[in-house]
Length: 295
Image 1: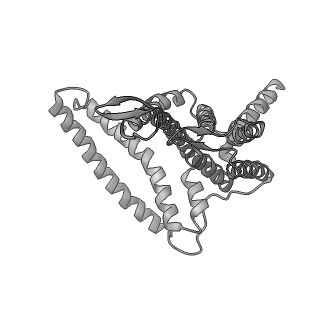
Image 2 (image 1 turned 135 degrees about the vertical axis):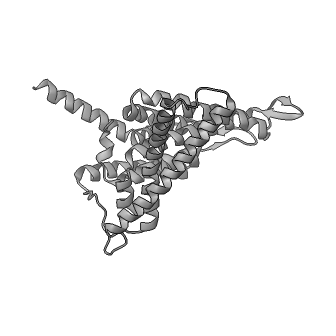
Image 3 (image 1 turned 60 degrees about the vertical axis):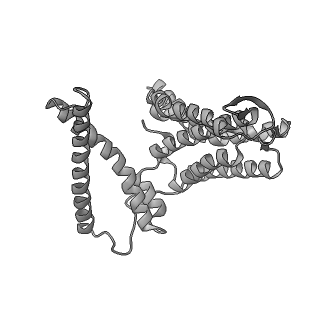
């Protein structure tokens, strides 16, 4: 699905994703984590539609539950002991810290899903091509290769299923042989594709100077407006963290900052900053609906 944030200058978009990904990991505050996860999930539904629900059920929720369970099992810090598992204490602090870590991981994974949708190989080359051409090439090829690899695996599996050698039937040994056959075909295909790609790049003059990216992204007034709002949100969040208005301690005992009006104001600014893509999508939807009503 086409997203309004997809048209933003790659530099502005990259700064936004760095902010969205780093803040949950640096702050680890329960309220900020909840805001981050909520904003990421809302945007993911704008991007993927119904597919976002399956993504959350298949990947995000299992990772979240696993992290929340494993942390108190291996982390025994904290002063409030609830019970023992084989003489190992399970504390309230470790459970809450595990829940916070799980929400943080879910937030980061969801933001990365949005990042993969917005940042194409062209944007990666445009952003890093002049500073790190080798790194930009590797990243752009990796981003392109993953969906191609998945699609080719589905085609091979479908062809084998049509020939009666699918992985869904037969005993364990037969299914293992079918799976190995798919992997072997994928390896052969990837090697052939890499040789073809290298020959194509050499024929098109890759490595010659000066280098320029294929896509030419301009910095317009909309990018300046979004960049200004993003800068304001980053400065406000950093100022709140510096002034200890956003602080949390999990060990040895749990201590949160006071829920003052200023803290709530900074939370609102943080939420509005992360909701910039959602706001753009809502604005585009309302504009499109208005234009359709005039027809």
